[in-house]
Each structure stands twice: as structure tokens, then as C-alpha cells.
Image (cartoon, rainbow, N blue to C red; front, top):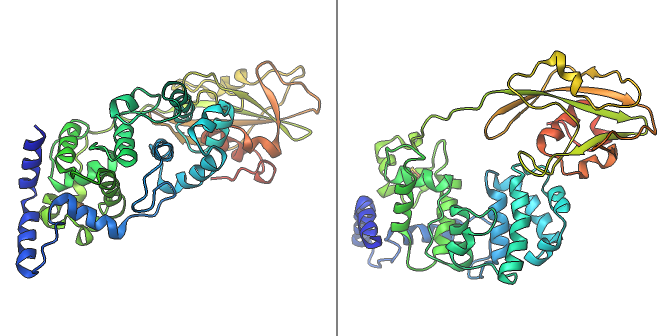
Length: 390
Ligand code: SF4
């Protein structure tokens, strides 16, 4: 099966073989880099990105660091991840140290990176690696996939990068490159099995970790969503989409159905001694275990005139002031609009049930999701909270 795929893919990028043939005629030395994978690896050896989590050439990658970076990079850019990765590895240099950390500390360190279920799974995964595998990441994709937060892509990426396993790590970047290379007309996500099969067929017999990273780099640096730099691409000669001149139109995608807009209210209670009222969200569900200011439910049928009914209750009546404008945030499944209310609360007022006062100067150390950072930035002077308006 695999042999067939390899044969099919190699013949489909026939242009590369022809180019290789031309190269052979021009030069007396025929580099082995004429095979598609070898061509890509040769390009990678010259142009690989230097990333904080990437082992230097010839040095074995640390599975813990590979795993940590891959979890952080899910749905997040390299630029946003880099400082978090540095902080995490400084604070928790091994999987054991991360497993021994409290979930709250992990959520705090993760705050701002988004998709918080990843942080909870990260912690659970570290504990599972220690408890079930003696602190050593398993090598097989199958065993990796039994760990919390590790899906097909992450298992393949860890398998390839950390253990040089012949694994096809297919993320969005790789889908873009492969659908262009073969001009795959089928829409994503239906085209996923075909893309994966093509990657499997291209896998080299050695350096599969470098191949996986090379493919990621190609997608991130040359085969970009807009204006791909085909002229610099090691696969330019054999690329079907480039030959047709419509590379940017790939991958074909089924139309996304956007979730309905939800609305809600957020209540920023600031005590006279510069403390703000917060609470912890339930462990399960969206933004589970994160910190938020009290608020109403987020609903499509939200009515602002009823909003104040959801405000926290204090012993004395409170005058809530509606701050003009709204805070907007887009979650994976729905966009959100929050009306923000603020009130001044007398010093020494106790916190209502299931809430707590936090000094404004330390609120940015809380496990605040981005939407709550936006709410606080909208309501309170950033010099007091150390939270910048975005
Ligand atoms: S030739 Fe262009 S479209 Fe094709 S893989 Fe390379 S960068 Fe992408």
C-alpha cells in the first residue's frame, strides 16, 4: 500500500523528475537531492527556521520540549508562543516538574495564550507521562494518542521530531502545501485522508523528523496563504498549482458556518482600596477553571435591560455605570459581544459568595482569558492593572 502511494506521488510530481533529469545533464555530479523528500531536506538544511524549541542540526530533540511546543502551537502563531515556551521551560524544565506544578500555576502561566483546555490537558498529560510511563514519553503514535490533549497531528509530530518515526504530521500548513503540490480539488476537511496519504508517500527513509519540520517551514515561510514565493520553492518544478498559476486558490475549503453572535454583560466591581472582584469559572466547559469578573450568561437572546439582574449582590445597593461601547471576542464556535458595567464599592466590603477580591496591581497574574483581559482594559486604567488595551 505504502509502496503504491510512493509510486503514485512520485509519478504525480513528474516535473520534479524531469527537472532532476535536466539537472543531471547540466551537471556532472548528480546530487541524491533529486528525490522530492531529499530536495526538501536540502532546502531545509539551508533555510531552516531557528526556533527556541528546535534542536540544533544533528542534536536529538527532547520529547518534552517537542510536546510542549506542539501543544502551545495548536491554533497559535510561533511569535505568540515563543515567550510562553521560554517561561514554561524556565519554570518547569522537565515533564516531572510540570507534573508536580499546581493546575492553577499552569493556568496562570498559560493566561493570554487562549484555548485554555490545552493548558488543562497539558498538565494532565504531564501527570499521565509520569504516572504511566515513568516520566518518559512513549515512542509510538498509538501510545502517544492515549495521552490527554494529544491528537493525531501532535502524536505524529512528536513521533517524527522527537523519535524520527516515519509519521505524517499534517497540520494546516502542510495541507496547504500538499493540496497545491497536487492541485487537489477535493475540499477540506474531506480531502484530509488524501493529503495524509500523499505525505506518507513522500516520507523519506531517514530524517523523518527533519522532513516533518521542513514541510512545516515550507508552509510557514514560502507556501504562504497569500502570495506564495514559488520561485524560491524546492518543489517549484513539480508543483501542479504553480504550473496552473492558481496556487492561492488552494486548499479548497467547504464553507465555514459561523456560530451565532452571543451577547452578555460583565461587571467590574472596584473597591475603594483598588481591589477588583473576580471569580473562577467552573472546571468543565469553555474557559474552564479560568478567572473572570462576574457576568451574565452569554446568550443569543441577551437583553441589555435585564443585564443588571446578573450583577454581583452586595449588602448595600450599588450604582452600576454602563461603559460606552462593547468588548468583542471571537471564540472558535461563536463571536461574543460584552457590555461592561463598572461600580465603585466601599473599602472593607466583603466579597459575595464564590467571588474574591484581588488587588488591581496583581490581577494580571491571575489566569485571565483574553476576553477578560479585554474587559478589564475596557473598564480600568491600564496603569493600575498592568493590562494593555488591545
Ligand atoms: S511551488 Fe509554490 S504553491 Fe507549489 S508548493 Fe512551492 S510555494 Fe507552494
